[in-house]
Amino acid sequence: MINSIMPNMGVGDIYLRRTLSEYSKLLAEKKSQNLLEVKDLDDGTQIYHLIDMYLELFVDKRNGKICKIAMLKGFEGSFEEKIYVGMTIPEACKNDSRLYFKESESLMFFEGVKGICVELGVDDPWPEELKNLYVDSIAIFAEEAFTFEGTKGNW
Image (cartoon, rainbow, N blue to C red):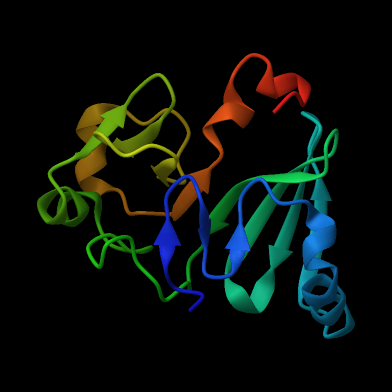
């Protein structure tokens, strides 16, 4: 089921830490249907946007592995049936008391849960602005990819 979000692991049948080549059939299908967009970032990452699945796969070009998966607006799944894309931040905080804002990263994380964050779609919001924001996307990630060594592709 594509809608099941597993922090630090994957979503549905797409898993972090797997090489992109393991999904070549899916990507070829999406490309043939004009439902795939690919974007290169300056940090050595490529984003594969699976348009009709409302997913973005972030791939470390140095090792070919998926380091992050973002669930975008239109994604019908949720995290633990509590947090979904498009809900307000106050509603999300009410639904899950583990959710907290990490100002240094402009992201929201779940206390005690590794490899998942809520992206706000706003750069550097003030904490008092959170009441007016929405869950822009839910992202799961391979923690080790975002360490000092991981940023060099060693993960």
